[in-house]
Amino acid sequence: MESKLDYKKEFKDLYMPKTKPSLIDVPAMKFIMIDGKGDPNEENGEYSKAVELLYALSYTIKMSKKGQNKIEGYFEYVVPPLEGLWWCDEGKIDFYDKSKFHWTSMIRQPEFVTDEVFKWACSEVLKKKPQLDVSKSRFQVLKEGVCVQMMHIGPFDNEPETVNEIEDYIENNSLRNAISTVSKNGSIRRHHEIYLSDPRKTYKQKIKTVLRIPVEHK
Image 1 (cartoon, rainbow, N blue to C red):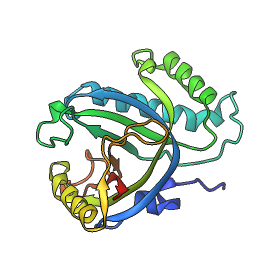
Image 2: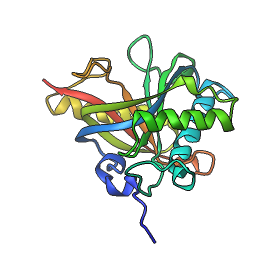
Image 3: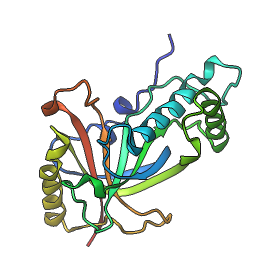
Image 4: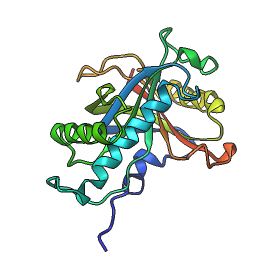
């Protein structure tokens, strides 16, 4: 039986950091992304619709080997975890007023995915789930560069505690928080989260989330 590439296991430095801050240089990766704003916990809100669309597109690509459209270079893989970039108009994220959130929800795509593959997936989802607005999605390469990251274990509302640990590490290691700065490729650097647990099935105190903050050397 052909083995499946599981990005979480293959790239543990990206997805399984320790529960203490560490420095990492994040390489370029391919993503399907959707931008939005508002409280992610709003029932049937903009965020939940974005997540539904992301998974519809990602699984359409994953299951493409079963259809007539054979994708060049296709290999078996596990769909990577949901991720998110977060920011507020005021600059620093207000974790306690989620209505102020701006976000980019995204899922990493395997290396064989191209613009053509993404457009094909959009057309397939449009046929099967016309209620989903595929025009909100885009295919993009993201290169974050140097960041400090840490595993957060527990409720999302407790994330400020982990963020404080990361900020202390930044301050004590001749680094500077680079959130909202513009990278060399023109993208704006953001607070980044990777969701390793399904909050619907996981006890709140055991939810695992990778928190990642872009930095630059002083």
